[in-house]
Length: 133
Image (cartoon, rainbow, N blue to C red; front, side, top):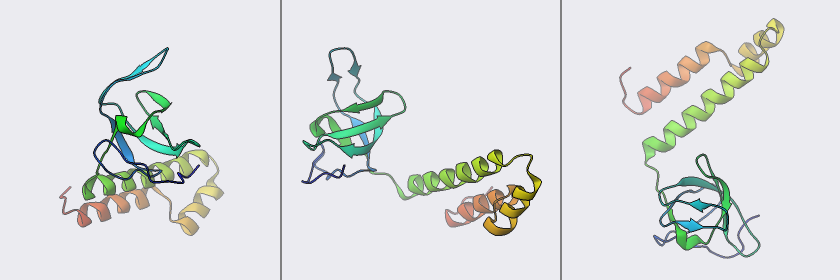
């Protein structure tokens, strides 16, 4: 659900779906505590505009926005995330088609998905970010 009013973080940043956030003080629930420093991504908002967070370390949880700081990613961090998502997509596509040579050939021709395209994406990223590999 999209939030229907502006929601602000502890560090006075507007929160939106897709934002990276960090828990700034312990969130105590009856059966679990989400500790300070846990990070995650806002996946949606509840009807009362509380962020729903998906965290690798803490799972999914809902909390008040004042428990969260918005994490401002650097340009490099955003580009690394984009590159890794692309690599994950391409390798997943190849893995799911493994053993089907006609499908692998079609992917290489039509979608330009192959081990060489992954290498090319890494090279483009390195050039863009002035990284020497």
